[in-house]
Image (cartoon, rainbow, N blue to C red):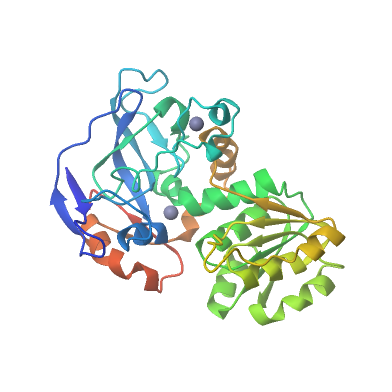
Length: 342
Ligand SMILES: [Zn+2]
Ligand SMILES: [Zn+2]
């Protein structure tokens, strides 16, 4: 098969003929129909995540089952599917309890093994991780759920349990943030988007933000919302944006931390005085289990959620290989989708 391969950290990826993957005993091989290009792929290429070399990136995918391992019960060749970006083991207490998103024994295509910037990809524990695509959801739309949209959905619907009419503040209108704005709006919330860039705020308005604020103007939120938002989302992941999000809340509000806050130079400071005094909930959110996808896919099938609107361009494998090294500086606001058949 053809795949995007890199041989060393920060070496130029190239498209090459490599051996076809083999289905693991409990897994499948998919023919990849669409794969999102994401900053996490760049992090793996740049050496921020340890991957075995040579490596094929790609973790936001949808496709058709092409081969099935002997222990797989639920899936057959020809099934149209997607997977969460973290694939769970299917055996541990968390998986058995329906919380596969925190499985301690996760496999991630594009990180723990070769990913989906290829014509085919192997996936583990298929009975736990595969998600059937309704006919109404095309492959690019499913791949656009990727890590960003699914994470935003889990944050708002699963963790914060956003209710219609609530005020939701989303800080950062990049991939995750725009997804959160669209999802908040679809759940019936009144969304305020905050970003440093006016273009990002214009994009947020287009997907459902009722108000948009430049980052310096977050102090206006309590007045806009009659005392603060019900829910805040930090989609950036810095000490400043986390604190701004928490301070935007009303008493008893819920904050969801989605942007990664790596403990660079110690753990970030969080305004716990406000958390305690106002009884705020501070929630973490990490991906989404396959079992939780059908609810989100139903909203997409009804046209209430349109992740495909976040796709800005579609490229082939060769262009994906060319784009990857500069992806941290990419200027496109929306998603880049890879079509391996191009
Ligand atoms: Zn598990
Ligand atoms: Zn991703």
